Image (cartoon, rainbow, N blue to C red; front, top):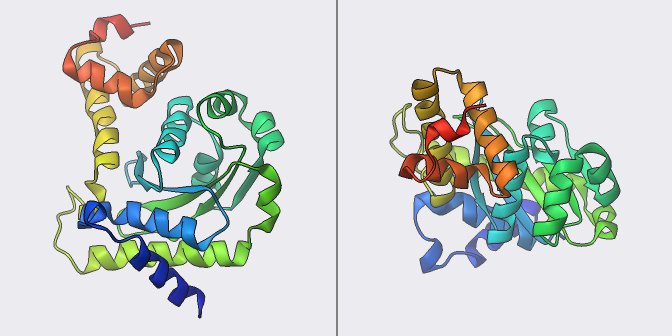
Length: 240
């Protein structure tokens, strides 16, 4: 079987009633990646034209946690792949050296000890990337880079095809941008807007305040944003 045929078969294998729906396509694609490649987990994300990092879906709740940790810190392998548009290979030693703050959280909160981040071909609504997570660093050399990049291209094609063959507005985006994971991150942008208005600051400063609160409290930015919007955390408490 070709790589494309094997990926199509893997995608069929992860189809289940609980994963049905266009909004969960990224979750199905992430799980198909873990069936295709010798990895423990995978996560998909993208940068939209406005520069916002949006997690699309992951193969497990633990992979979702790893993405939130990276976003909370503001740096890591996937963000580096987004910026450079080049593959990033990072075993535990590399993670500790290049992203010590993110790595400390990753090692404490997940079993992952290595990450490979691959940029995806631009989709209709932004540039994507895929995180491949390993619990054993010595398994990274076993990853066939050609196959992994080919799988990444198939993921991009699936997202683009789903967008092309559905109706959506430029303001809302395709349905796969409205799953539970992207919606959780959307709360961050809403909280940033709230902070901007009430504290009279710009978006970068608002995000910096959310990140500072998150790291100081040992939670994710997504959790802080939810507290701000729910009124559990007054915006005045975030003023530096």
